[in-house]
Amino acid sequence: MKIGVLGAGVVGLSATVELIRRGIDVTCYEAGTPMAERSAGDSRIFRLAHAYPDMVELAAKARRLYTGWAERAGEALIDEVGTVISGDHTSAWAAAMAAAGAGHEVVEPGSPLLRVPARLSGPALLDPAGGMIRVDRVRTFLVTAAASHLRQARADKIESTPGGVRVWSGPTAEEFDAVLICAGAGTPALAADAGIDAPSALEHHVRFSFPLRPDAPQPPQCLITQHTYQHSSAPGTWAVGADMDPAAVSWEGGREAAELASLAAVTAYVTEELPGVEPRVIDRLYCTHNPGLSDGLQFLRQGPVLAVHGENLFKFAPLLGELLAQSCIDGSTPTDAGPNAA
Ligand SMILES: Cc1cc2nc3c(=O)[nH]c(=O)nc-3n(C[C@H](O)[C@H](O)[C@H](O)COP(=O)(O)OP(=O)(O)OC[C@H]3O[C@@H](n4cnc5c(N)ncnc54)[C@H](O)[C@@H]3O)c2cc1C
Image (cartoon, rainbow, N blue to C red; front, side, top):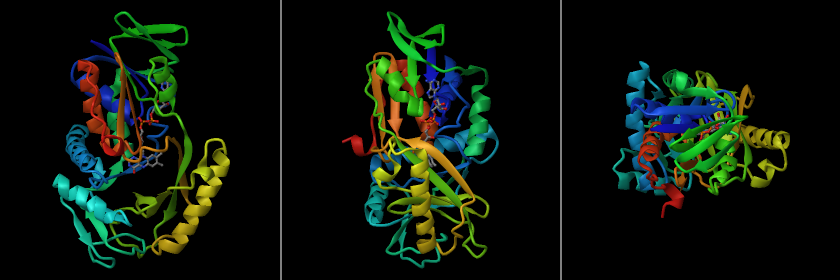
């Protein structure tokens, strides 16, 4: 069997590496540099904690698979410092973890179990299996494992053939039995060629990094509040991303205006709510983002073409690799999860 994977972000590479492991003839097209778009940077948050029990269970499976990757990579891929959830959604997320049988604890602000540089109000949910994903290490592992199956080429267009799918790159075409589209912001255009309507609205998003004050608790846990995500992205550094008013980060408004608005909002938040952090930006990570699906996973199929859509996909990467590889091989469609699953 011959499979084409379009896009070498963390999702496409995870599927490619799993297909290679299963002995499949796979080619992964990448228009730019592998893992340099939405999968860029050095770190992401891992957590079992989610709003829905099915998502907690999927995250637990992903965590086990990350351990398998770490054994193959020869180094830890997640710093298991724990993740803290704070805000109005805390009790609902705790209930989802309880329903999924995931270890967790609800603690009051000021608990000695909390190690975050933030001022918290109200109970917080401790997810001890959470932590910081070492994106740099995952990138090295996946790119090395995908090796000669990676093709530096843009997939311009796909079309169905009697036996499968043809992928065009410039004047060159190659036929595959099945094609997996995981091209991030490039997915809707490629999916449309196959008659798949993938959500295409885009927003700008920026995560900013600040210095942690020397007296900040160590090692800090990752933190998810009602409207922010935060973690130590490198020793002494605290990265913060915030949900913004959609009008402030709209695609039409342009990247520069979105970055300025995000910078003002995040810096004000750090000044007011994070006593353990200096409100001085030392780094930033920009990406495009499809709003609307929060933590959910959505799989879209048309004949031999499968596309994947979702946000916060990094934590699920090895699981997505398995699910997508299996579905490419047997023609099935993985089950949607999260807010769109009901
Ligand atoms: C700042 C930030 C913070 C985040 N925090 C978290 C977090 O804490 N936890 C978490 O789990 N997730 C987090 N995420 C989300 C997570 O990183 C993304 O969901 C994930 O990396 C998406 O991977 P992907 O492979 O789908 O997309 P991408 O990494 O964008 O990969 C798509 C690839 O396809 C290529 N491509 C596009 N069009 C074509 C084409 N026509 N032909 C060939 N190649 C093409 C692109 O060049 C790109 O390399 C965060 C994202 C950002 C940016």
